[in-house]
Image (cartoon, rainbow, N blue to C red; front, side, top):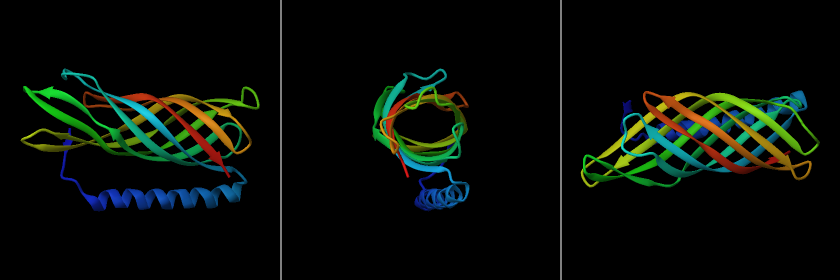
Length: 188
């Protein structure tokens, strides 16, 4: 369990790194004649803690930046935040739990079943920052782990797809973050 104070410079560094990664992916994509893309998803993130009081359900949103190098392989970077918090009882006190920031990098491997349906599996790395608040204290909590999941893209056109996915973001130190998401992709 990592507890730390909020550091705005750390978040800004993550955002700048994401922009740099997207720029690099876009340049690399041009070089390899791949298909760069951006997208966004809404996720119902479930948070469970071993021997914890409740399973929490937080609504989150994230942006996706990546490049599909061929029919079977993509690289992707994501950054997101919680959109809705949840409450739990800790030592008799109602505590608000929020997902402040999460980000990660992933490798996606899949195959086109038809011209419109593309199932895939993904593996990568996710860092998440949570905040616990009650009337007496605020605790910032960070966790990171290898992530894996499955999804499917439904191509609506050559440039637009709808996406369904299930991802286990983190399962480390008795904390698990996972959940389904629904979103879209826009290909350049």
